[in-house]
Image (cartoon, rainbow, N blue to C red; front, side, top):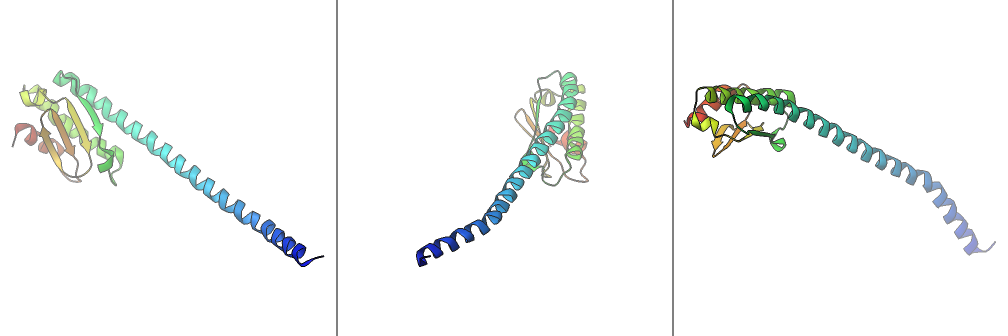
Amino acid sequence: MSLKSAQNRRYGVRMILRMPILAGVMAVALLMAGEAGAQSLKDARARESHMAALGEQVVYTRKVCDSGLRAEIDWTSAGDWQMGLLVRECDKALGALEAACRAGEARAKSVTRFICAGDGAGARLAGASLRYGAARGADAFKETQTALAGR
């Protein structure tokens, strides 16, 4: 056997020995991609569920305020909030909007967009948009009443 032939054989053996390692690396990469996809799907389903919960609450607010109110959740500000808790806090802000509509306040009846956020910014009315940035321990109802009153 020539020297060249022996070198080729050793190279071939090394490549065959490396194949399981490459296959293992590929398997791990595929597994990680699958987990990321599953996590994304899980997140998407959770978001859809929480948006539906907020939507149910907005239906009632629309009736009380006789408006075409639209609602959304600012997912970029949700941070470490448990979504159910964030939506619950935003519902308290919607309750203040409903109370203001029942009292006949024109500013409240002009609100057509509600944004639920978790950044602790409190309630802010800008034009026809009411944004509530929930904070732990804050009084969402009172903060929203204040914003609607223009104070």
